[in-house]
Length: 172
Length: 200
Image (cartoon, rainbow over all chains, first blue to last red):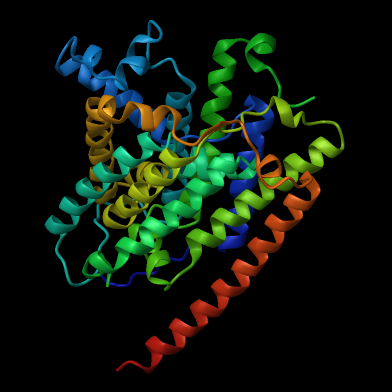
């Protein structure tokens, strides 16, 4: 990818915007934002469709799929529909909706996509271990001053900084 | 008085409509911030562009102050809000693993969804990876169930409980820490900008 004109919003202004949305979530629903939960539900539903009965043996997914009649009737699913629409509209306004793969000049698309799956899998395991991601733990728990959420947040930065050196060729 | 109870007041359908609206704002803010782009996110961990830190901590401070002032004015019931329970060790171990996955994969779950929404293939494949990792977690969690359930479990503790400080002091400390980090972030960015200019 060559250096195109990816101009984004001032980060502090974007942060205030995001913070107001986060507060609105607390004011309306009593809880903050979430992202990884929707992927967990999708994973459970997909597993159940591909291998019927298998979720019964999967100690984590079974709770997501069997808790109610329709596992998709969950706030996380509706919120993510909104996230997709909001991201799409913002991207369209900024002229950024196009098929592409982000990486540095020293690796190709194929390697980058492999690393995306690998990193996603590592993050997916970690996020279930920590019971939430950057949205539900760091942002939401951080804003209401949960002690565990702050410990999680600093651990995420620590893990990323410790690993960055080994994948530097992917980005620069 | 906040939080509202939309489900009993307006019904289940309206509750879901509000979730779509809030999600829209969330996705819009993430994309505007540049978080649909893995290079922007990864730059944080090479100290080239500190957007992730700036956006995250500005958002946390903004929401925290609105909750704090709201509860001072008696319009927000802080104790009725969901406070993530603290499972200290699984949170720390999971956080480190998650952070490693973040810089290898280039995204976190929310940003990957926004990236996918704007047709980025790496974002879409990161989500495929997330699903695989979650599946493996569910398959293996019984081997470390005791650790996951109870290691460092403290319940709904806040920083105030943990540090034995008043809410006002903690809020002030978080704001001060954020401002110090923003100041440092600007310095670091200027340092790297001047260094790359000197390169041929």
